[in-house]
Image (tube, rainbow, N blue to C red; front, side, top):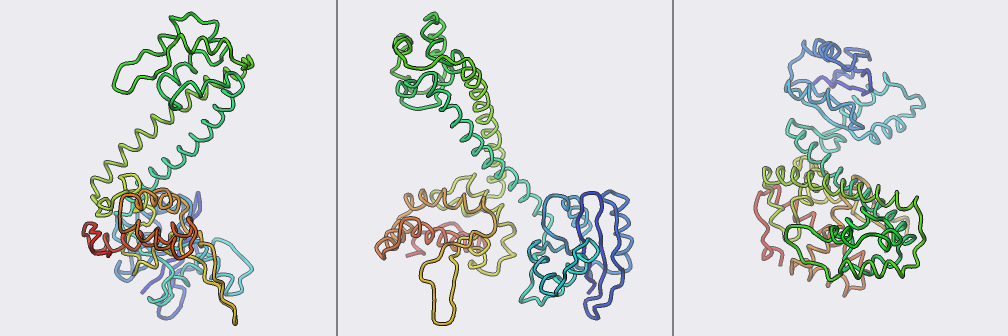
Length: 394
């Protein structure tokens, strides 16, 4: 077996080739450019060996390795991705105090040389790029939601200055009329001095939906008695923030449609779990990656970072520890966002949650137990490709 360690860079990469059986360096660390010419140079160095006898390793970090990874997978090479913390730890364990690109290729080969039972890498496949696209979309959705919260908080601050009574006039925030009024006028002073016909136009919209009880006349009267402070700066901010919020909503809608397309194409059995939507299901599967890389459900729980720390020293064993919080924060965020819905929609999870509460667990701790149970169920459904059956959990 020939081990190929590749250290990834932005403009150029380094590689070396090592014989697994003897530990001999066949090709000493050398560089190749991050372009077609460089990739062809790498292939030329690999040609003397059969593809079945080659294992290529590279760190799964950033995005600079995507082009090379796809290039190698399309040519049917076996490629292993390694967590950068693994190579860093391996280098330190060997007493290495020097880090450079050439030496890192050797460290990657050392990681590839670990026994099968303790292997510290995962073999990737061409279909992993579908998961990559889904991961990028779901993460973009999460990021847009966070931006939406930021802009919404800034909008509320401006409203509290120019028209503090505005929110109390509406049953819910960010409705069509709510946003139209803010975008058109922006302050209590502008509404109070506006022609009533302009205000009425903000209340006109076509389509379905419950009409609000507030009338243009009521809004104008309340604006006249408002204690809001006239501020042209805040009015400008309000108009801009409304535009930003509306744009983000449109972007999220576009993303959700694409995510649903991926979800329907995948048709994963985890969608049969009550409380899991196209978005949450796609997010979970994309963040976990190829399920075949996990030999049991415990490894999924560990990868998600929701397993509690186990701390024991001499005669002391900690009874209460926090979760590890390793791995993808997006995966943990999705799991904790949906677990309440899963508990509410599924009697089995609800009973399990209540059991943990009855045992003296706190709400958040009981949620954590349900999250781990959900991951065990997801692992079973995906590996056996069967739909969710609550009777089998009783």
